[in-house]
Length: 337
Image (cartoon, rainbow, N blue to C red; front, side, top):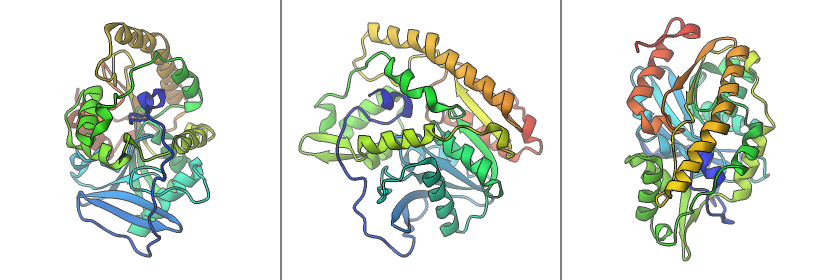
């Protein structure tokens, strides 16, 4: 449950469920603009969504627990002057499990590079949410020839402290059996928790959850989610080694967010208190560390904002990302407001 609150996915339920049982394919299966597509790299089947557009490529990478479908509403907003792709990491949604059990940061980055190769993409700008910051940082530090610019959406921080932070977070209510009974009920519950009404939430729920006689459960095993988080933690953020211009958005950590329906006033108060006393100081330290060590880029703290900025303020965020991608002076980019 606490991992769900950080990653923005319904991880309150634990289930021993394979992420995929797909047979290997020799070619990519392209579903068309805005539809599910897959490529097979070795023994891994990787899911992506091509949102279309023309120009330099932008690749969207979701946070832990979500799939490429979480960007169904946001991705098309970035098509102005760009081709936009959204990617689902191994072990999640319609991507396959790792047959060798490797969920390290290096393996995840290798998947991204392999998918780029398969799709004929030499270089791209990357936009990553939450845990995807680890993949962005490694791409920037170790593969500068494949990276144009990097955009972190509440993602430019070292997650070594995350397990302890989550362990101390006030407990919240898991979804009830009634909520778990159908995709429609679970989607409504999830939208209420996120405070949005977007088709992308329904599409992401459908991609990341599966129906069982006992109700909806995550497609991803909890052990896989924990392995991905552990692999990310083991790969520190190499800010000083990243030459690519970088833009980091930080949510303010001073509002109640992702609280499920049925949250009591006492629970809401406890969560806000914890966010202000613990999460916000941590975020400010991470922001200062990014600014102190980054070679090129800037940080933007968004007042009274939530972790899922791209769902909460999609147009506002897209305009600033597009301005950054187009700016001739990205290291010190400024915005109109």
